[in-house]
Length: 90
Image (cartoon, rainbow, N blue to C red; front, top):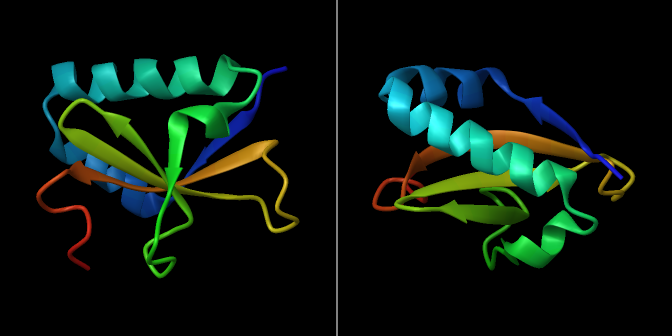
């Protein structure tokens, strides 16, 4: 089963700020997670849900995401993509 990835405007802006090589690495990894039977097995639930519900670790970067409004994992809503030192500073 393949899940749908939906990016917020903030996530697109975060990707655009990265080097092309880093952005490609992140997008490739997100596509890998998208193709998994259970993408949440690769994610970590966040203790502070004001940032988002889950995060994927992609090297030095973190991708914060939520599930769709019904709590299903058919849609992964990518909220932001930042370096690990900056990701939790909103």
